[in-house]
Image 1 (cartoon, one colour):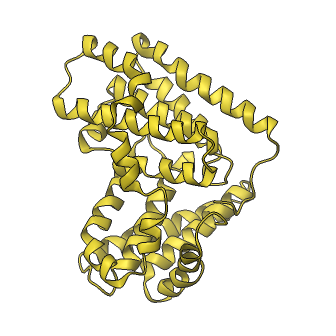
Image 2 (image 1 turned 180 degrees about the vertical axis):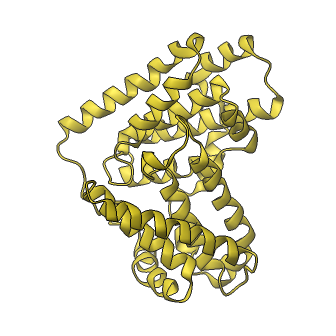
Length: 294
């Protein structure tokens, strides 16, 4: 929070809680975040995990019901609720998941984009959420830079190997190139010394930026789609010293490795190496950041 400007701080600490009093979907989303935090602090206390699941499920139901009547009055609250629900989807306890490798969180992140796109006309009119939309780095600047070929160049061997192992539809190839570029932009920002909170902001936009052809390829467990996601989580490890990300990169990378075909296992060397390098770096730099850092 310390790295956000005063407008964003006021929005998050003052206006959002006030909105939650009026809109149940936002209230339940906030309560689910609080319960999730408690479940991470006290993992042996089953009551916090149960509370999180109850509030999380309630937030989703309330959100679905409210979206059918989105208007200028509730658009801000629905967008914040959607973002909070999407942010939690990746950090839910592993026992909730029915598969060894699950991508529900990615679909939920894409849903956030849909909600924001529909609501943007009202968001601009009210102006309340614009500080959050405009805080740097914006998702729009991140996506624009991801289209530049230089950022995906280091991952060219993945694209080249994939081209000789399967026929890739043009829209899926474009999605691969875009997301590898997206990861390259995040990596360049981290390597340049950008503040970790800003790097996390870039990382948080990956799910909502993932095109539908890529998400479909993930559902089908297509090797390059799995590897793109593994590379994303590997870079996330560099800045996972906050409670909602801690342990996520390792969990997801090893899950991906478990379903990746044998003839593609060689491509896991980069994510696994980054995982090890960033883990070692976090040990050298001392204890994790405060539980309240951004």
